[in-house]
Length: 475
Image (cartoon, rainbow, N blue to C red; front, side, top):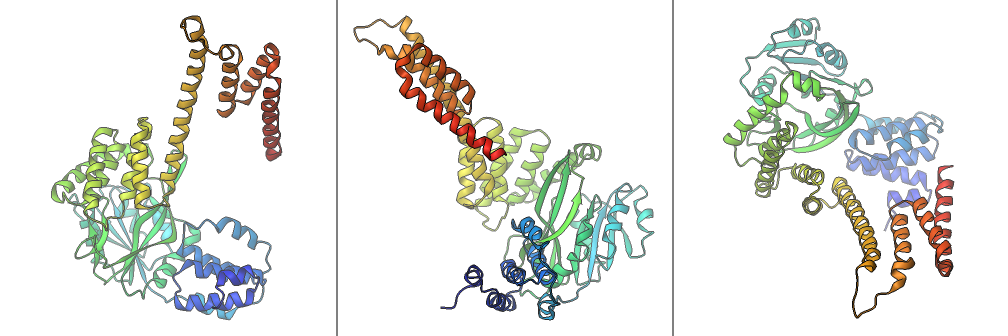
């Protein structure tokens, strides 16, 4: 059996690893790991420039990769090396044309920022405009923008599908008017489209949305925004609309992939949401959706999520549970983990630990690697441990106090009231992360009960050793 690429890399057979990685890429150029292998093999041979390009292709295909920061940092110390024509050949991407689609309703404050960021990234921009302000006037100053007036009919899918009718390119890339493309990713749109242009089943590509919300950054990789035209793809849903085929969203007639095309978004800022009454509008449309498509788990999920955003927690839970029930009958629904995530977070904030654990377990049953569920379970265990420490401390104090009232033929163990309770309280403090309090109790107990010296000296030594270790780590 021939060694794998990873084995060749471990054996430091970098040239052989390079050749093997190139064969894998020729067989499957969309597998990010193949490009990672190639990048590593080239890097260790001193081809810094070619290696960087291979790693960036891998990152384009796997935007959530965790190796990016350390690898790009390591590449700074690698010389550029000779030009590699063979690597350029592997990196070659079929040229495709791309239209950008934007729905606008009174976005005069952000439309220029959005359109400026798209210059050079796409071939044409189609604006489906419902505005009464200067949005269309400002957009008309851009020569590559076509403005399509649209009468709003309470249906985002209808607006997007109208835009699709006016596009002439190979692919479409959708942006919101309150988003703007990251400058470094101007070429990434065409590159991603070109890579996926020849797939047997149409590819729907999800971009990387970076949301700024009250100085907090949230990363969203689930926004399906880039897909080929002329392949029967269209939008479904009045709001939080989804891309699907003419037979709907829940089928295997298209594939979804994530790509590193980053857009910055600030439209979720609370002040903006309030001024534009987005939540009220969304809830109105979502209530219509669950009436029109009661078996669609997505409608119930988005209704639950937006009800939660409106502060209607009880109604949100009911909608999310309905989403779970409908999802179990629709295995191609891709947001069941999101349903469980919201349910476990609501339960956690309500201090309903058992419910939170139940939803975490359901999430892990659906996907054993879901980080949020593992984190939630650990958080709950911490809370439960805190509660147990509190109960243990109260129980110890009650044991000592009981000596004042306990009278019985059975004699209690008097060492409990003398020093055992204090040692137990010190141990609770130590386990709860309060070493100074534990040390003080140990020393006070030792002062009054010298016979505990052997036991307490070991405890004090353990505290000092742990403190020393932590100090060394912080240096």
